[in-house]
Length: 401
Ligand SMILES: CC(C)(COP(=O)(O)OP(=O)(O)OC[C@H]1O[C@@H](n2cnc3c(N)ncnc32)[C@H](O)[C@@H]1OP(=O)(O)O)[C@@H](O)C(=O)NCCC(=O)NCCS
Image (tube, rainbow, N blue to C red; front, top):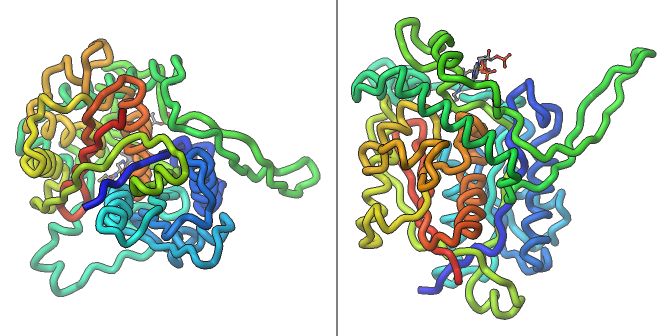
């Protein structure tokens, strides 16, 4: 089997649903820019791409109608370049990387683009018109459980206290604050965004501006402040707006190719995708997914948790992120604290601070992980996340020398 090399991986900033900088910019416009930037960084022609596979969790409305194909056409890829939408909820962006890599590995494609997009300002979580099966749901409501309630279930069942969640959330914010201050998000490209502004004569004009930072990061966060927030999903619960992932708009993309293409185009690859796996778990505690997918991944590649230099585990909620860290053996505060210089987990913050644009997240976290692996010279990095419906995904990347 051939190797699949990721030669470029970029992302837009992640910006807050409705209140943030990208809320009035269409998802196609975000994705087109991500595709263009990834192509530019890879230094290949669009005609060399075999297919464009884009993750999206709720592919409807402005991000519907096969956003992969629409965006490829909008980005002026030749007609011969295909496009697909890939959906595995919060792992969609990672699934798109894995499916693209597998095409390369078996020899069906030489160069493929992967990516993800989610515009949660336009398409809310659950979609615009969810229609659970009425008969089946009556007996089996679990698969439709609200994500917040699944986080409450994890907290209750596995004794992840409110204090633990708030402490974890605080460090996520502080890591992000520090990273912004020190310019550590090299995977972000300055993104053209639009806003509609009402003029004094009552007319509305569309203005363009550049957004180059994640706008959900709160440098004013304190543990005491987090402790005052009311639970949002259950009156007696512990999951709040401060210890949940933020709902966000964003896009990301990467170029993946075989060794022959790397040599032909004279590209310097960033990393290889070594292995990808998924696993199911109980839907009403879907956040525990990475506690199963990461050990499964390590078993497949015959490696140990101590062999891994960096982890990007999506912070859907602090409760599930803490539980997963506990289960895989990286829950010591030194592994994730903003004050620890040896931390391995979400070293520059996670979705609690940076946001979680559902179908984009897998692709976004890959860009972040690969950039961090390059900066730190880390050989092996794992990306993992949970998914609605009860699943975990995990991928192992190996840095190229
Ligand atoms: C939890 C949730 C409902 C909160 O939504 P929201 O009310 O729009 O959240 P916001 O980020 O706007 O925060 C609301 C308020 O909480 C407070 N707050 C949030 N984070 C805070 C922090 N770190 N410190 C202090 N206060 C904070 C603020 O008062 C904020 O209001 P403001 O923005 O006007 O200052 C939403 O983020 C959510 O659904 N998250 C989970 C998403 C999810 O399930 N994803 C899929 C996972 S599988």
